[in-house]
Length: 275
Image 1: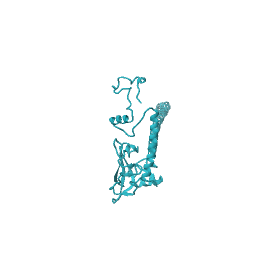
Image 2: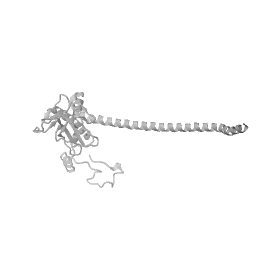
Image 3: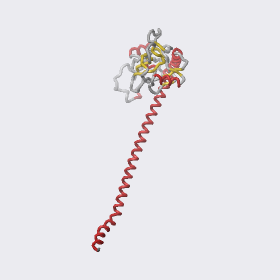
Image 4: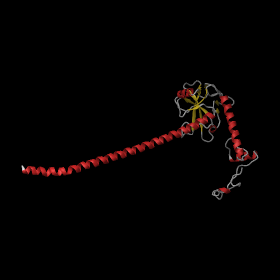
C-alpha cells in the first residue's frame, strides 16, 4: 500500500504543480487568439470604410457629371436627359414621365429616309443634319466612346421595329447625322416638350446663342480684345479674320517670332500678350 501511495504522490504532486501553469498558458493563448481576431476585424472594418468612401466619391463624381450634362441639355431646349442608355420602350416611357416626348425628325412620327427637305433633315433639339456635334455639347453613350447616339421618336416607314437614331462623333469634324437602328439597341435619351416643334426649338436655341454671344463679346471687349471667332479656324484663316476686323492675332512678348524657352518663361513680369 505504501508503494502504491508513493507512486500516486509521484504523479499527483507534479500535476498539481503544473496545473496552474497550464491554465495560465491556456489563458494567454485565448487572449492572443482574441487579439488576433480583433485585429482582423479592425482591418476588415477599415477596408470596408475605404471601399464605402471610394464608392461614395464615385457616386458624387457621377452625380456632378450628370448635373453638368443635364444643364447643357437644358440649354439646348431639352427638358430631360437619361443618365445611361435605354431601350426604345424605356426611352419613350422616360420622356413621358418627364412630361415630354422623344425628338422627332422633320416633325414627323415616321419617315422613309428619302426626299429630305431643302434645308436638310431637321431633328428637334439637335438642329439640322451636318451641324458640328461639338456645338451641342451632349455626352456620348459611354464614357470611353467618342460616338454619341440618341433615340428619336420617328419610326422608319415601311420597316418593322426600326427607328431613326441621331448620331454624332465627338472627335474633331464630327457632324450630326441620322441612322436607322432596330428597337433592340440601347441609346442615350433626351426629351423635348410634348407640344414643341423643331422650328420652335431652333428659334429658342438661336435666341440663347445670341445672348451667349453678346455676353462673350462684352467680356472680351472688357479684356481689350476687339473680335473673336464663333468656331475654330486654321492659323491662316485666323490671321485673315483678325485683319478683316482691323486687328492682329495676339503676340507673345510683343514679337512676330519667338524661340520658345529663350526668355520670358521664368521672368513673367517681362511677359505679355498683345491685345
